[in-house]
Length: 77
Image (cartoon, rainbow, N blue to C red; front, top):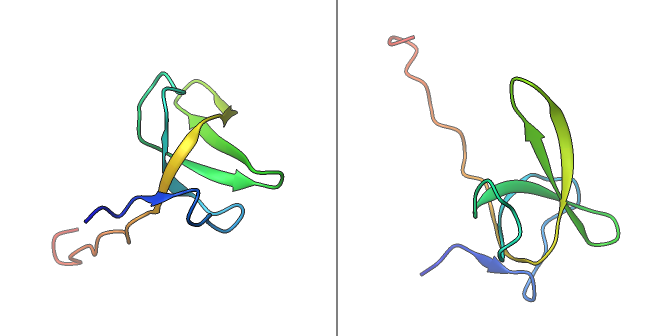
């Protein structure tokens, strides 16, 4: 069973980062995190050591909630 949710079935809350699958839309990866914005716009935050930007995605077909962060063993840190 897939954890991917079709945008035809449900949409995430606005401004909540989720993993998305844009159908042939983004050149860095075919799975990435983005937020749904008012008006049905999907926006990915592009951030690296040189710049910070937002890019609108088209053709998002599926999304899924991000997993919970890992539990860090305090004795190992």
